[in-house]
Image: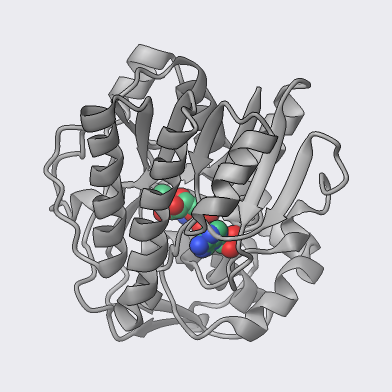
Length: 330
Ligand SMILES: NC(=O)c1ccc[n+]([C@@H]2O[C@H](COP(=O)([O-])OP(=O)(O)OC[C@H]3O[C@@H](n4cnc5c(N)ncnc54)[C@H](O)[C@@H]3O)[C@@H](O)[C@H]2O)c1
């Protein structure tokens, strides 16, 4: 199978390419990534020279480049990970999120339509559903109610993807996943930020009172779910993906502090993010029942492995700490 993966030098995209190359011997992957601050060529080091992986530096807003790649590589499916992905940055600079997440997705859809690509998988987020109270879960039928400019830009791109199915019959699928953790995540996001600050003897900053709840999934489980959706998903459908693991930010911070043997006074509560969503929780019943996918990594084992990965891969994250701009969570 020949696939175009966009954003394949980012956290989930690079893990997805690794997963696909490890799982299939007949997979040819074109990896289109602009290498923004979040894209990292070092994340591709172990498969950089694999003949089944072809890296192209470029933007998903470049229609000519995309149609050229679709033609030359005989692409059958597009998996769109490329995005501006950090909520804090979207509060400061929402325009960049509209440009990449909305305009970029529209450009990819146009190219897919023109070149009659067989399948278009759009990687989205549970954040498009807004915030939950203490009870309930997001299902595929939950109302779209994004609260941050990041979530709004993802929701807008989801609706464009849907419209290309309804209007043009393009074979599209949207996946909406909960918070991912695992190796190769940029250290501005909560878990790698706390781990790398912990290693460096710095404070571990947590927003507000630390009681916000996120539903966590190991990135490898997310990658397996996307593979499942790519092969067996029904066109025009939305699939929620989640690990059924709700944790408060306080619980996450304490887990990391325990693992690194840090004293309680290293945790510091900082001024909350404006409009900070209280709780996300995914009901993944549809992808479990209809496609037979199940997460296999427990949070305890996955977090132990993740902390150890950052301890042993300092050369990967150290240079990134320097371009990190002081954002804190998610
Ligand atoms: N991280 C999570 O917990 C999570 C959860 C659910 C959904 N998602 C979604 O999954 C996708 C990947 O998230 P991530 O955490 O890996 O993000 P990331 O920020 O680590 O990676 C994004 C990648 O996209 C690239 N990129 C940015 N603009 C581009 C452009 N115009 N053209 C080509 N490439 C461009 C960057 O260089 C980077 O490599 C995003 O669409 C995000 O919304 C993420």
